[in-house]
Length: 277
View (cartoon, rainbow, N blue to C red):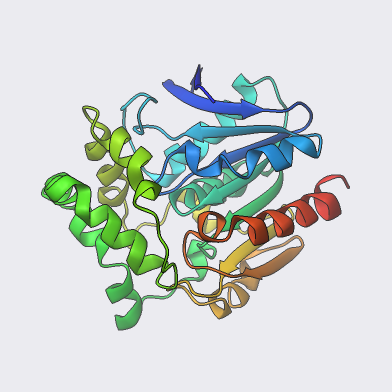
């Protein structure tokens, strides 16, 4: 698939597209690109949906233009839905894509038909503990001015380290898994933009979109081997005013890449049971 381009919320965004029907908007995380959904999109398109995967702002070939806070990323998604000619969309977000999707659904539930998130419980439910701070220590290293240089060092070795750390049971992780994101990061401004997501994070001032309870049906996917344990998603139930389901699938933080068959099976079930209602 070759990217198409569109203007949304004042930034030029690249995206991949397959199928026709109601819009399902896929949002990648770090360290990833829209191609991380390449195995998922055909199955969703075959169900009769319009599957669109966006390269979030700053991730080549999208425009590297700040700011990079979660409220802005969420506003990008709402603007993209409108730019694609749709009134509503099903949002599917992983990692930072989940953060953006939470912000979008929290601020504009009228534009979100359903929310599906991977690997991140609702941010409002997460409480800092010494173990949590240790597990997200990359927030501090990547958010510093030295973050881009750390990410680039030794042909982006830190990227491979993070994938292995977050999906510890992925023993047959192929070297090609991070090739596309490394290629994206090799373009001017992309690594700086990706690190700016972390620099914009301020635990003392949560994004406005994260302070609101979610008012649309939500399904959260939790990897059984992730560093964020499935029970954390159960503790987030108070953040939802509509239906909320937790789906455990094998794998770690990158469950949709590590175990695509199992993830796709559950995603298809989720869309069949909820999204057509």
